[in-house]
Image (tube, rainbow, N blue to C red; front, side, top):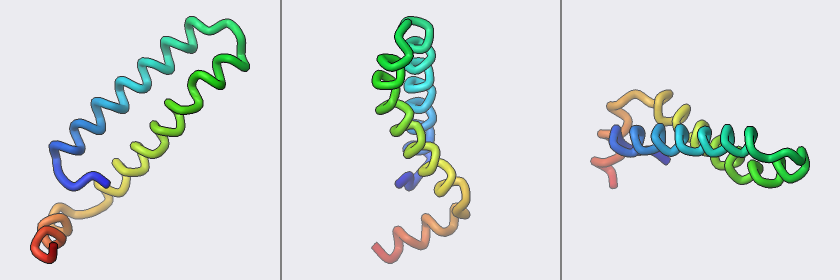
Length: 71
């Protein structure tokens, strides 16, 4: 889970990198089955990171301050 702005920005960078990798493979791989096997891990990780982004953005910043006080 993302806990602060630094982790948020890092996750955005990773998402961008993974999207570029998928785009590259999409343009290079000629066999549809090989393409799907090649990008499956990237797409799974993109889904996971996007869910983490959503959870982070859904929470108000004060919630993170509270969780640090109780930890």
